[in-house]
Image 1 (cartoon, one colour):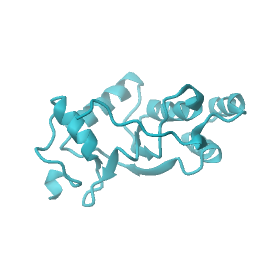
Image 2 (cartoon, rainbow, N blue to C red):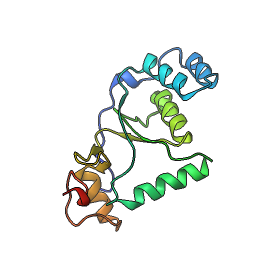
Image 3 (cartoon, rainbow, N blue to C red):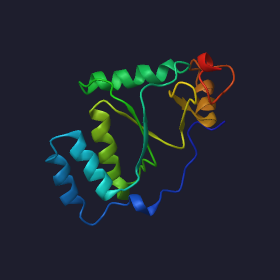
Length: 153
């Protein structure tokens, strides 16, 4: 199994717009996360897919990592935000800045291609590809991948 999630073609809709400096200035002047969300929706409509409250308890390292990041940013865990994509290319820096903003506010921002919602409890469950990566790296994971938490089977 590969060490990382396979490369996905980044849609042009997440390219930095020409007015990126103006948008960054608006972001800096936003007083609430609601204002940031409105700004994101203006610039990148449909980027937000859904939210989930917690990670599936079958993957404790995900919650541990989230809490660690929150301690470093002096924030509390908020929600898991599932987004269309988080490109990691230089010409997609604005979308990355938005993701970082939410992360610093206590959200765990994740790509929709990597996580699904447990149909019973609504927790974030890694897809089968991530399950293989976590298993290969020695993380505590269920013996067999499932779209449901083991407690929900």
